[in-house]
Length: 421
Image 1 (cartoon, one colour):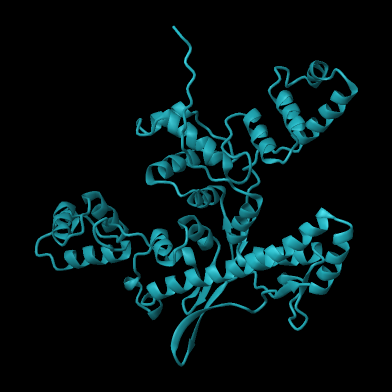
Image 2 (cartoon, rainbow, N blue to C red):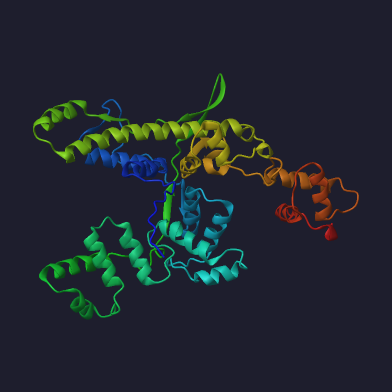
């Protein structure tokens, strides 16, 4: 048989997450409280960023903030919140939820992949569970979450650090050594030269920094500090960005221009990076605030009846709809909604709570509206109707609902079954 050389071309799509893009994404999902603190820190760290002189802001946000408005997030709630950013389809999301439901308080996965396949009644395959565990769950915060053994826990944290290739390989060699419980044996196998001893010690220090129970001490407190506010004026109600207590910053152009003259003679990449970082921060903050307001305006316009004391009139609304209407990527919408709040006549409300999916695939109807319909059908029934009969009646109106959906919302409405009515 002759050897044949051939050239094959394969086209594939790949998203490259640049450092600048990653920073923009991180900034986008910060709450107002976190963003203000970040700006304060940047002012201290970057000499090219300055506060506008005629704008006074407390040096410590805590002096002006009412800490009564706070919420605590459990590990499980945080993980479920984070998977929304991956833009998963319904099938993949259910697999991720299954995995999260089996993560213990230490952050470790209680069951093996084959066990998860079994408890899903083989609805999910081992390979897809494994793939999502690695590509999604292991990317969540705190780092190391979803580990199946302590070696994997350590390596997930080591991989997240920006270590040199040499140091990373040294850490890996130590972790996967057969004599993990005997450091002297590892050292003897590892160290041949003086250089190796120094590398060994550095790698050991990195490993010691790893948390073997990344989920154990997790307790995130979120301070609720609204970005938006509904105001009333002569033209009616509208939503505005809250400017109060938000630091106004600018580039110290005099300093930047003087430094640029010196940089022409003596190049200094670090100083150039500081100037670029200052300009990036101003642009990104402006874009972030504009996008928050843009999304808030759309949500308010959609749910205006809800704010007029008619909770039944809350409309169905999804990330996809906002994405299409405002020409924003769905993942951007998801990040914008995270930890963003509005001050309304009904109190401080999270933007995410105003996102209401439809319980029907054929018609837009919220769970509250469906419960109201079920209540009305039962109220005017001459003879108690079963859930199946109620389903048939609603489906004749074009709702395309399953009987179990009717049962679920009838129970949530505290209405007894037909047998006990």
